[in-house]
Length: 94
Image (cartoon, rainbow, N blue to C red; front, side, top):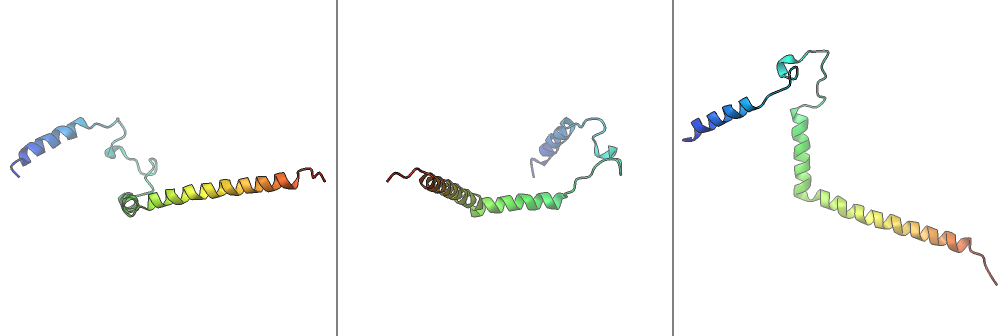
């Protein structure tokens, strides 16, 4: 609490440093003309929490692991089908 006056003065300097383009401020909003975001603060928070939970539980790593195995299985299946076609259409000499 002893640093509160310094913090407030620094915050005021930071607020003065932020500037918006003319016509892009909150006061310049025109209902019916300007688009509104289709998501709200709750949506942003929920998305952030979902990503944080996925990181915490390792879901992204789990998806990457299974994705890698799936790609390997697809490549192996393709190689098996290609080998079958090669043997099926090969000239047979007796």
